Image (cartoon, rainbow, N blue to C red; front, side):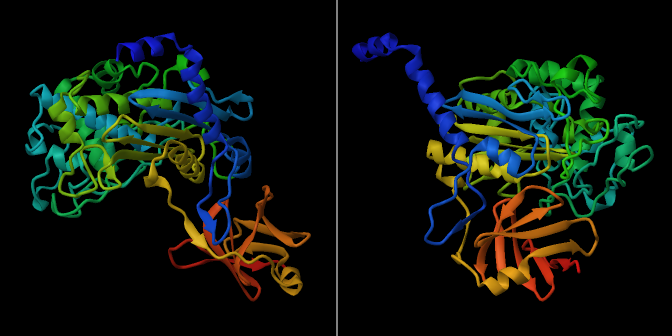
Length: 471
């Protein structure tokens, strides 16, 4: 054993760095789409090429291995117009991932004896109260989305808008731009995601601590975990402007004002980057094993990661793949993100992007899982593949199609024996025919079927979206 320790000390640092660099390189060149084809080798894409194909400005990734960030890197642009690249320090809106850190904060107050998980929340509320007729709501209900409250998520506000208080958000009163948060079912009856319920916990935290939400979270949660680049301030501090990613619409245009502002801080207000979020994941993993307690004790962390009423929902987290992973995804206006952490072994990853296109995140997640041997993410839909279709059908399918709403235009063109589809003057997407009248593309998880002069888009949810041939 001593010989092995001595040998490891004598090895050059590059021997370890090379492993991380090689893993990073393999991930960057192993992105695979949502679909595979029978009898064909899986398609593989490079991450930079994929950003261009999917018309996504930028993405940032961090990979955790053995309780450490093995590598992190940014790709593409934080702001296309400024030609400002994504770096590991670029800050994105974490959107609903905010709920995980909010859960830590609430449980910290429980741990400190200032709140009780199973107490009636009216014990702590002074300015807003839920309708009592549905039953008693507790903090555990709110954190696990089993409180029976409405409002799934929030659209945010333009940077020039007047912002509502948490009470106004809960009451649905102006300047709030969402309706009232109110019970729709008895507490504990079922799990239904509720950003509105998270705003209730935000109000409780502010009421009990007597201080601004962002200040408490920074001092008691973010800083102790080492998430010193992150913050819950809404709007963000002026001195952080150079680090903020600009949010982009699906059509490639920047969001007005560069991003939306979210006074619903606990539900959607965190600005962070994958490296900082990885620190939260690692601390959660170590705390669960009793190896760290920077914010929560082992007992409290284990409670966070235990299903509460619904088998998939813990307290501010979700449980995936037979409880082998804890997770949360997020989507604000022009931002999307996801994180996964293993329950055992200290592995995981974080992916954040400044566009609401989730395909790139799924493809990177599968690439990471493939390179690191994590089998849970190797899921793709499998289709037959026609090697060719008759010339008569190729001629019939080429042309221009427009959606009934007029919002989407598709131009189908032929190059040799292949057809491609361009959406709203974007890049051409190769069409893979699974039947003579049906095709898929790797850039959109949907199937398309020709029916006369109509092209029907199927997303798995009826009805189909119809595109009519433009004469």
